[in-house]
Each structure stands twice: as C-alpha cells, then as structure tokens.
Length: 393
Image 1 (cartoon, rainbow, N blue to C red):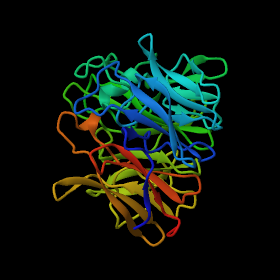
Image 2: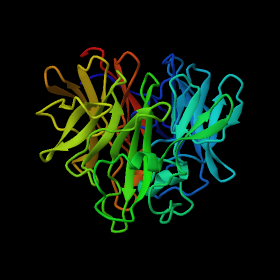
Image 3: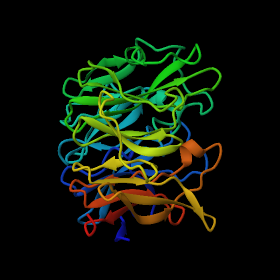
C-alpha cells in the first residue's frame, strides 16, 4: 500500500529492540540494530551478538560492540541517550548482566553496576530487573541462560530484596527503586494458589520521565498463570504504586503489550473483552478506561501517536500458501478503519523454540510519525524495513 524499503544489508540477520522503544537516534539519522546469530536452536550462554549502527543518510553500517547479553525478541536492548553520541546496551561481566555505554565518537565503552531495561528520557539513569531473571517467565529478553531448562530462579513469594534497580549513570551507583513485594502487595485480588513466585517483566518510563510502567508476573507450582501480565505504574521515585486494569482473570489474563500513550498520563494495551481482544486505553491509575475500537480486533504490539488519531500495530502470524506472514496495520481511530500497509513473511513458529526464535513485527514510528520501521524475513533472514506512510497520514 505504501513504499517499503529494506534498511538492513543482506550480509546478516538483524533485529531492532522491543516494539516500545525506537531504535532511531535523536536526530533520526542513525538506526541501532543487533546482528544476531542465525540459529535454528536456542542460543547458548556466552554466544555473541553484534551491535551495529546504520547511517540512513549515507546507507552505511558499522559494528561498534559485541555482547553476550541479547535475545531474539529485544536484540541487545539498544537505546540512545539524549544525543547521537551515546548508545546503551548490556553485557555479561563477571557473570552479571550490566548496562554498557558506547561512546560513538571515541569508540570507548563504560560498564555500570546495574542492569538496563530502559533508560530515562534525560539519559541520567537506567532501570532494570536482573537480566538473568527475565528468562524465567519467558525466554528471549534478558540474555541466554546458562541452562535453558533451568534458568536462575527466585525463592517462593515476593522478594523484599529484589526488584527494579535504578543505576545513576553519573555516580555509577544503584539503588532498589521498588521491590517485588512493594508491587505485589498492591494486587487487588487474592492469588488462586499458594506458593507463587513473583517476577518483574517489562519496565518503561513515560516520555516525560515522571512515571514508570511495570509488568508483574507470577509462577505457580501447578503451572497456572505465569505468563499473565499485571500492569502497574509508579512515580519515578518509586512512590504512588497503582494497579491499572485487569482482564476478567487478572492472574491468567488474555491480552498484553502495554505501552505508554505519548501524553504520559495514559496507557494502551490489548485486553480481552467479552471474548475478543480489543485495543484499550486507561489512565495510569486505572481510571478513564475506554475501548479504542469496538469493531477492530486488537493484535500484536500497538503504539499510538500524540493526537490519538492513529494507532499502528502488527498482526499475529497467519499462513498463506505455506508461508507464515505478519501484517503491519495502521488504524485510523477517528474513522474506525484499518489500512494494511503490507504483509511480510516471518520465521515459522516452532514448538519448543517458539518463545525464543520467533520473529514478531515489533513496529515503531519515527519522530514525526510519517514512517514505520518493522521486522520481517522475506528470504528466511531477519531484516528491518521502513514503510513511508506520509501519503496517508
């Protein structure tokens, strides 16, 4: 429907980061990507991925770092600082996953004491749950576990000593911002079983740096729940913890992929409503809940632009003539109409490696919302593409 450009070269297998983070530098000239090993098995602890920077103007690519901290769903979790000079990732140093700063002017790197899942908008600190624990509830986001079948785990319950760590990048000191117990104690319903173990998942600042969105999960001995995603918010200093909204069963909810609205006060999320997943919006404290479309089904990884006129997302994979495809969807919320920008072949979803090896679209906008970047694999190779939507928005 619109012009599509492949922006990664054919010489490797490339991914961006998770859908809720833009891989574009602040000037929008540079695109940070991870060149990942092309494997038909789960990655092993210690295998390297390579951090690369693409100059979109000159159409060049440069490898700037190699890391042991990566996964197929987030790459090396690359994020830009407030300027084009500094790029942030993680690495495993002395057996621990920690944030690393890459100075693209001097080619020097600096390691910090804490892990990075998200950097503050002003570039002064990073937030993170221990990277080795991210793989307990779902593989492919922290870094390859030393034991795929038995990753490092926490004791039963909600820990008071483990949680989201905030690392000050100027002083290189870390503090426990909120513990698992702090957040789990705000769950409004009693757990369906005893002996559950709580873990944090995605962590995200709003654009203003004033609030943090946090996903909480719980594993039960019976296997109930686990991948459920209870969404909380709290102030940037860790105070004012709020449970937002839940599906009919908050302990085993159908839905997911929450993200901040650009206004910093609301969130959007796929939520199961009367048997159908819908795009929903609500305030950081759970109030002002509304369904964004009563007719269009919620899928994939949605993001919304500041005016709330357009939402874009990817679809879940469907098969066409034996090839699995994902669609890139642009939804006009005022007209309640969707545009299918393109359909892109993706990697087949296998059984045991499903969570680790799959390739989602993970679309993200540029800063003026005229282009959408996304992932695909038209030749069985992970690549990143750009859709120019300036003619229809």
